[in-house]
Amino acid sequence: MITQLDWGVHLRDWAASQEVSPWLVVGPLDSDWPAFLAFAKRLFVCEAGSGQDGCRGCGLVERGLHPDVVELERESASHKIGLARDFMAQTARRPGSGRRLLIIPEAHLLTLEAANMTLKHLEETTQYNRFLLTSAYRGRVLPTIRSRCQIIRIPQGFEPLMATEAPVEIESLLDLKRTQPFGDDELGIIYAFLKTKIMQGAYDRHVVLCLRRLRDYYQVQQLRGNTKMATDVLLASLWQLRKDREVGQRAS
Image (cartoon, rainbow, N blue to C red; front, side, top):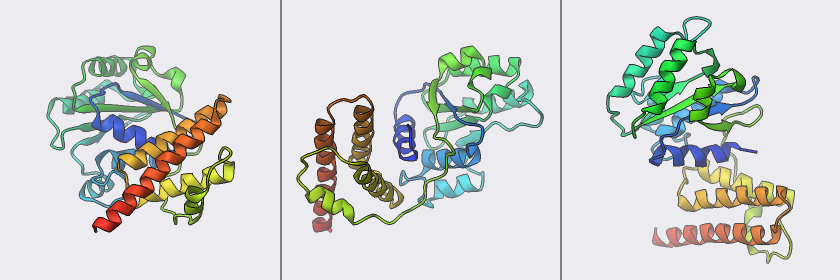
């Protein structure tokens, strides 16, 4: 399962890397697609990397004024060639921020002409353009477009992250010498702790590492692998995160 926290990791990595493969985001029809797109836009431009920071970039996105976040609008029952051509014309100019997010919502509504033109731009995209397509009907998206994209699934009923209070129990987890894998309640505490760190703007490499180790733990658990080793690895990443925090506190 891909969680909202995973989205933060994936989207920030994608935005900052040299990887230009477009994303096709699929999910249930009843997911909150506007909330997902709003979250993705803010996270893509947020100066603090949290998507909840209220920085200048986030503010521009909220008002629909950010020049490097472009969304294809629809004026009829489908995405027709005229609007798609105007939308793609913006890919030619160099973005002021160094990268541009181009969003095509409901990609299954592209007409054949518009879809073929889109495919051409996906195949010839530049290093500073990132295409993000969405659809609740993956099978209706032009197969050649699907083949060019990374297929990403959003969680059922996606909701934007909300700030929560960090549970104090995380300290007891770190101080406990592990003799067995983490239980579901303990994993929930770790998840909530990392979620709070991100909401507080702490989206550094150690937080990202902890998120990846937590994701790895779930994968190992699902595959019935060595959960004891996965527990030790996750715990070590959490210990490093606390150590870095203590060093930062002493430095300040």
